[in-house]
Length: 540
Image (cartoon, rainbow, N blue to C red):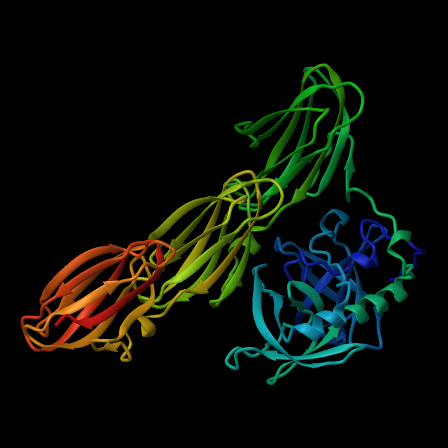
């Protein structure tokens, strides 16, 4: 195939928008002969190119390309650079080529001077994304980075080549080589300059021109979930478009106001039997946006109906997220972690982690900018039982805890309830069972019991007590407010004392042992989470 040279313009994106912090990982999975690797899309004048490490191609001239939707296309080798990178010319439709484009970091050198860690994002065979924490060993100020896995027991594997490295949530480069010790990354700034030179792109972003959408459709032909529908409409006129949509893959609908006469119209989504799935009314003089999540993979009817007057409509359909990204096998995390979960009405995103018994985690839901949306966060055990289910709004900050009842594999399930957006969730370890019930938890009169507690968690302290020698418990005020129960058990395990307390108040109680032996002081979290601070004194 012939390499296309262009002068100062790209269709849809410019090279200055090659690396974007909004991207999830590589765009596609590339397989050639017996090799597998990663690649990203690069749209030039309507042709979808794929950029991938050259060694993934081997001696092959043609590769199979898998999109996140698990759709397959082919691509032919178009150019090989001196660096281990190649350009493939694919038959991916233009409408499906603009997913996960990247934006070069404004000052990558400064970013690498500050951060020594990052995340490598790799697309798996099911379309999902595997995130691997890495440590940056060496920084070459011109072209390369040397990295290694943060965990020695999680080495890089064959098929990781071409994965995108993110540093501080900014794309920093593409993984070229992997071995047992780590890997070599080609820096984003060097890659961008190389591609700019190859495709003849002007260094100034302003020289590039963009189009609003990959597909403009003005008739009633079939469209995709990345299409731009425009046209005229009159009262009682109907325009139908057949669109294949994927299960649990939300589609964004963006309606742009049009000039001229105001009209009222509706957008309906129906199945092929014309069962109504969605029906919203709009005015052409206003901007709107909403999202729809298909319950199954099917061809649906998007119907635009004129309700009153006449005028023009401008409707864009965009893929908001794919099921493979929302529920794929790569959605695993280790605590601490940051979760960015797309949420739209009826969408389900799942992220899995290993929880330790009696080791509470803290979930912090960070307020996000943009339109407010509502979603639920559910925690599910390996048996499918929902242990926690709370609803939230994206325009507010929240924090709460979850205490695993046993060692298990748990799922954080984010379900979209109304409108749409990307939930921002921080997961951290609030405290651990070793801190709550460890061998170090031995106290005597004159010492203090203090620590963290959460709902469902249990802290235990051992104390040698003497019969008829009262112990004075002084409970100091702490924040945030939480409620807990303090119990005392004798050497036979019989409960001799029990009372509930609020951490936001001060208390004083005195307990008189009936026997001389080691007693257990147990603190059980009852609501919310927080800290406790209890001073122990001899009462006499």
